[in-house]
Amino acid sequence: MTARARRWQHWHTASAFGLLLAATSLGAFAACDPQPTAWVGTYVSGLSTWNEFDASGRRVVREAGRLHGTELSTRWRCFDWDVVAALSQLTGSRSYDGETSTGVPAVSTSNVRQRYGSVQASFRINDLWHLGGRLASTRIWRDIASTSDAAGYPERFDLTMISFGAQAQTVTGPGNLALSAWLGKPAMSRMTLNLPGRDQATLALGSALQVEMAAAWRARITSTWHWQADVRYRRTDIGQSEDAVIRRGGVPVGLAKQPRTSILDVPISLGVACEF
Figure 1: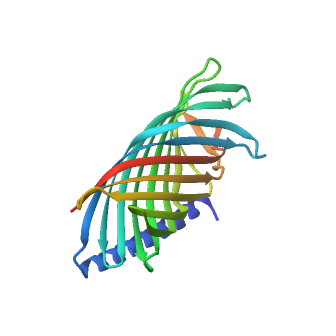
Figure 2: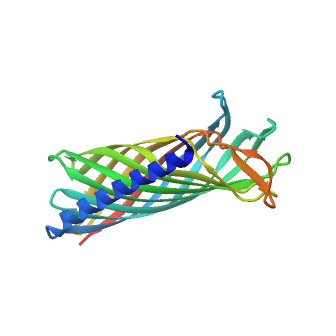
Figure 3: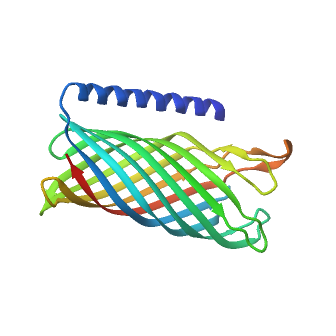
């Protein structure tokens, strides 16, 4: 199957899932008066690593650092349905330890901005378990600083993931503890590359798999307010891209590919929520 056919198939899968999720959620909400809506604001800080590997499996790039920012989410409950929409933006920098295209070692810094948005719907199976699906979009801006031996360049990654998962909730002490696990595949994945002196190029990334595990604890402050803390482990493995033609002034001058990439984020969040 060609890359174009795979992307078309992925978009059809995403559209079908989105329509099913929307239709099911709207049907549930049309049949009842939703329970109190909660707005949640959190501060997020966490470890972020980025690794790239060549065709032999040798690591050619390693980045590590911390990203910080905020997340705003809202939640609706109706009957046995729980729908959550979230939006976050994180920024920071990572140390860069890699090599140039000619194999020369390079040590630099990568400035990162990451925007994440998701819609998640889960259904209560019993008092302990929820099963659900999630549609999430991640956009990552990565700007590698120049060194004495090589010019840096900016690039952007766009990932749309469809995930399915399970969550277990239980009362513990004065609050509630929730543990969840999610497994996702891409509906769309691409990279936009801006090499110095070259035209902008778009690369279709390889197949991807995302695994996320999370733990969240929340405790009530008043009848309206509560605070919550959570930690997530999210790993995204992306296969090597296909070759893309690099042009200068519209004239082909070479080829480029994105190596197999592994992204690991471990964000820790602390925030407050208001129910009304």
